[in-house]
Image (cartoon, rainbow, N blue to C red; front, side, top):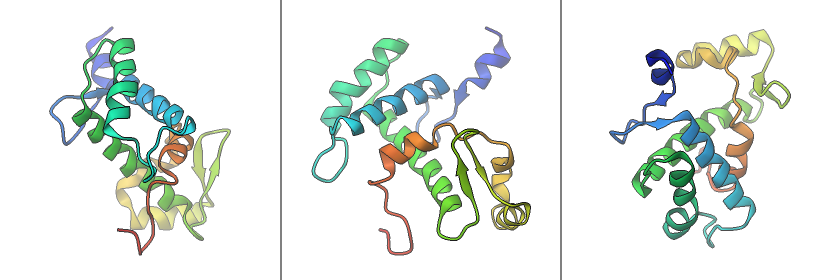
Length: 152
């Protein structure tokens, strides 16, 4: 594997000094979906530290030959929440954006997209970015993430 390809496979995690690979993130998200669908959440609709450390992280560590910790898990979960927040903002009430499950992209009329990009210039990639994880994030975070002006 070339240096450039290895470099491209790293995703920086701001709150942690180690990086998480795209493969690790994808596997973690898949396991979080499985945990959610299996009903492993507590009364607050959250995965407990015990569930994460005994059922999720051991699988990631064994299959990918890494040593991810609970702290790294919480950092990645914050990243997932941030991404999901961006996605839900796009599909929010009367935003004009919709979700195309076939192409895994957010779609909108050109005028709607241009107005959105004026207000959010740091999200220029929305035109071409495939958002493969959106549906999984909906499963994992959809019921557990408060959105809107009254969220805490």
